[in-house]
Image (cartoon, rainbow, N blue to C red; front, side, top):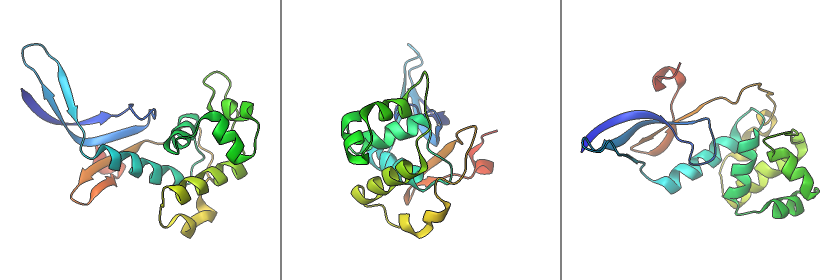
Length: 160
């Protein structure tokens, strides 16, 4: 097995904008099969949750879905807990005709996730959360270091 450390887009969370830095890839020289070794997968999911609920940009369709699923909620559960019609949740997560989530509903979802997932510091910067409308969802570049998962600055990530 050949072993390399690479920068990889990690789509298994259902988020197209997650990039992991220095991930070990083992590749068989005979058959070409490769294996990605991701340390602390539960920690990665938790870190992504923390990044999403604290980001200033509005949540994208996949991010709404990811946060809902992180709570173990079906679309019906989400609708009931956010006091909206079930069709509204489907519209927020739709590939075909997505409808933006209202800011109040988005803040409520973020706050519920922060409460249930016990994310500290969420309320310290509420005035900055969900204030930026972005045409493109920014990359979330992450590295697993000695202290666990942490955000990598774009200039250090090797991302153009």
